[in-house]
Length: 191
Length: 197
Image (cartoon, rainbow over all chains, first blue to last red; front, top):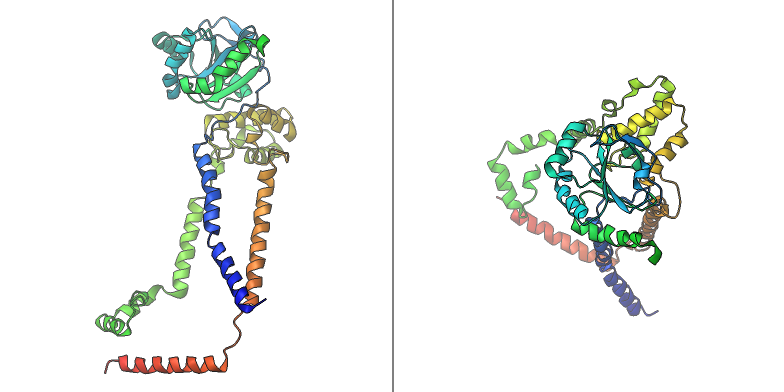
């Protein structure tokens, strides 16, 4: 190789190397941007595709009555985990009322709460729930993999968990995560 | 002396030194070894302050057997708190971690094996709860990425070292040496002229 030519080549290589940081940026920036938009709390439920765990717990509204997993058979429904100690649940409450008015069956799981304040909550704010499971010890919550309130599960007519949302359920979340699935589960013969 | 080192022309530096006759001695107090020792002492303080104190939250008194206590301590280090995702069950004080710790204690007392406890937690909270998830298609990036980065680093290191060896400057030619001497001579002369009388 002619010396001059070799110098030209190494010059070109040096110049190309100047673009390495730009290239690294081009790769990292979209990755980090994607990471920014992700909700680290949004975890898929380990129960997806599995039945609601077996339980026998009292009803919040009629403490003498015992409820169990048979509650979920026969209709596509929502199971909403809530508690009076949970401020986000108060924010979410009006939307649950709205869903109930639309005819969506909503069941409640009153999670690690006290009976009296919880009943007062339903009296004061309205009761969107067909039935509220009173889980004072949090045992059913633990079996469901609940790690905070509010959480909402979409359960099919055989009592199988199909989806979960961690955090406040609102119109946006309903449209994005639940609405289509809810519709398709409603009409199983069309699938 | 560090505060006089930034100024470029020598004369100015000397002026500053003349005006502040005490300065060099004072600045010299924390040089070299002294400064290093202060640094290490601070580092030690930070290390102690930032140490986690797991003893505050692990309720070992509830367990009947020291062997169970040892297993319990180990297990709560291995599982991640689902709510506060950068803490393990031992470190976290969240209600869910408390519940899971008491559940683990209950299972230990009932004679459950570590594998059974792990299965119990994974069935409810998913593999997410494991700090060491099993090696499968969903986790191989997690397991292999550090190795890949170490390999990449080694490759870059080897390449850099090789190139340095190859491009080590050959000694000066006679002509260049003369040039250098001439330049140095000129600089020395200029220096002499610069000195205050």
